[in-house]
Amino acid sequence: VLMGGDCAESFKEFHVNHVRDNFRVIMQMALVMTFGSAMPVVKIGRMAGQFAKPRSEPNEVIDGVSLPSYRGDNVNQEEFTPEARRNNPFLMVKAYHQSAQTLNILRAFSTGGFADISRLHAWNLDFVENTEEGSRYRRLAAKVDESLRFMKAIGVDTSKPEFTSVDFYTAHECLLLPYEQALTRQDSTTGKWYDCSSHMLWVGERTRDLDGAHLEFTRGIGNPLGVKISDKCTPEELIRIIETMNPQNIPGKLSIIVRMGAEKLRKNLPGLIRAVQREGKAVVWISDPVHGNTRKTENGFKTRDFDNIRSELRAFFDVHDEMGSHPGGVHLELTGEDVTECTGGVSAVTDDTLRHRYNTACDPRLNGSQALELAFLIAERMRLKSGLPPL
Image (cartoon, helix red, strand yellow):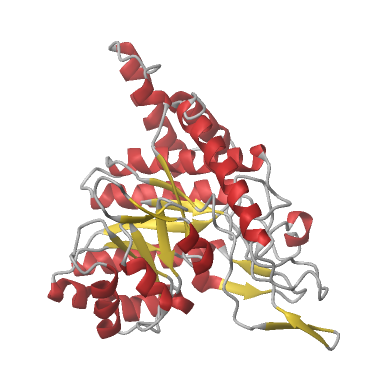
């Protein structure tokens, strides 16, 4: 599973080019990961509904003035004024219309030829050109190139829909329950209930209380679900969450999205996996290596270091190797645009250069080059796990 997209969607950033760039980088990553693992990759965008944001503090204080925190464009506005920070239910209607437009744009790109496999590979070669001669990225890209040329040589028609269109899904955090409830419908043929705001929904670390409304809501819908888990979650608590969200233990229904930081993950994840194995629970384990690695620079920018993100991903794969379980996917905050919000990686962003293109409305995102670099590293690790020879 590959999940990616903006930290939070916004009204002012909405543009067909922004949706296109995010879609493109996810597709580029999926191509590399599919080749590396020799497995299909389920592609899911944090799009078409990822507006609301949980906040650590209910209020924000600037120069002695206290106002309600900004909670996302479908709740209130970012400007620090009493009028902007007041909750406005009509913003949910505006978010719904933008989400519908986003889905239409994604539908056009995923079925209209934009996702052509040859086009995706050409974009990946543009990335590879900026890496060192003889790098692992170049070796993997050369292998993909060979495979495409071989298919064409033996008469495989790569202009068929199998090579030019993709299944692309959307997901967002199930946070603003009035919005989710308004879009929940009963299937007239099966009688099951579905939240039609998205294909998949996840419950966040802050709202996964066992006696809370969010778990109670997700318990009653048929959508694929996820739940974010940090080092605060105990094995016993995780089992109770799983039994609440997926009482019938349907394989593929529930994803456990792990966000801890590398050191805490190595210490805490084995116990969680052991409990799930012991109880025979069917879950998909997904790594979220970004949320546990946020820091603030001396000049006040929130950022994430590429090396720390890579370390957490490596720890995730290591633990699953030790436990005999399957690392099922990755969940990233990213953008296809050339922003400078996370430091490190081939784009060589530093604390000093963060200010150049720091555009996020909330948390820092990996830029296109950093996201693609991670995809190459994941592909290499998945290749080893699949028993394929290293490149």
